[in-house]
Length: 92
Image 1: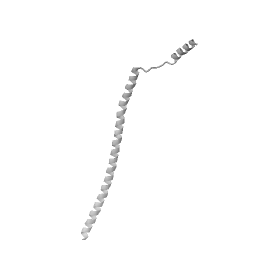
Image 2: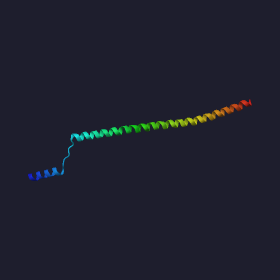
Image 3: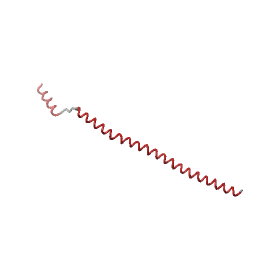
Image 4: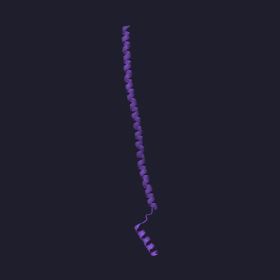
């Protein structure tokens, strides 16, 4: 019985080679992860920065367009008042 168990253990060792993580492999993985982080984090930061700046620019552009329209309305109102003033001055 013992011979059978020994034989099965040896076959198990041959067929299922156990891989162990050594220190060099661990350092390599940590180094690669840090390299990926160093490459991706600035990219993510820049993309978010661009997004927020473009959002602010869009908001300012909308306000600018609104102010231009208000300016046109005010100018028309001023012209109307000026015209009425000139007409009323000439009548009296």
